[in-house]
Length: 75
Image (cartoon, rainbow, N blue to C red):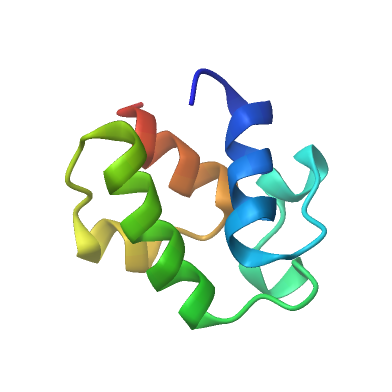
């Protein structure tokens, strides 16, 4: 995952949701169809894809996909 576009594609592939780059700055409650199970699944996938362990408290506090992306890439 080299950039935000690849992250969005990964989210789409793993969740089946019609996520776009514009959803990165929206709160999770603004992402159509989003639920907490998507967050758990995506956290696991991001750890596998990046080789990084994500802090689960930080993941739970993330307000958006954009913040989750930043956590995944170490920003």
